Image (cartoon, rainbow, N blue to C red):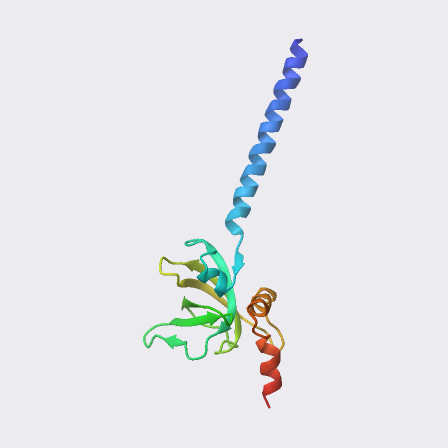
Length: 154
């Protein structure tokens, strides 16, 4: 092999190693930012990984809301009609948050299966429900609560 070919091969090998390292770093960064959606039934079945940031959605269970008297801590349950998951949140809840409301909570599951949420999102209006939550409710046999709720109100 001539010295010129050896030099080209070394440059090509260095280029391939550099591109591979850049792709590996980009994939590692993206992996940490992915928040997969899980319904309460999937969480109850053990499909959601503990200590990993996830999104969980469903309806706020009637009668499950518990507020701390001396802090912004709140605990409530979310359900898809078949199963429920307890959510603990420290902070100010959205204005549209209420029992029976479609929500999505972002956080990590602890060892007891409670979602330690760091963000809670509520629907915008009477007819909106996050697509993942609507799909989970339809899959469990519960109708889209937002539409029926809007029709039932005067």
